[in-house]
Length: 79
Image 1 (cartoon, helix red, strand yellow):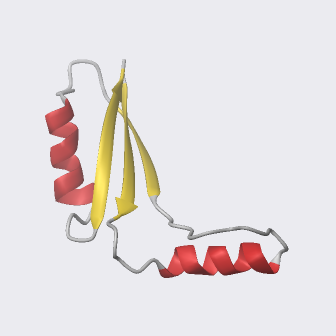
Image 2: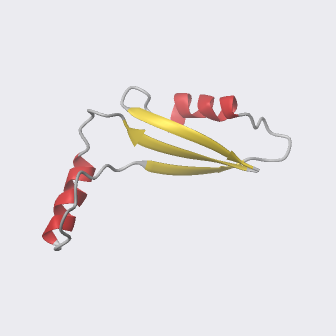
């Protein structure tokens, strides 16, 4: 079993990495590129018999994987 976590910056938080990618894409000739936002994708393998509830994974995110002051996260459990 595994869990996937998508971490993204909250609306209104400056994303300098996204701005750099947005500028680079435009410089490379890709027209019509709008705002680019960069996030993280985390995949967690869960051992047999481990605590596998969504709440447990959300606790991991709140304590370590995401900075909840400036980031949102979304958890999905894959059986």
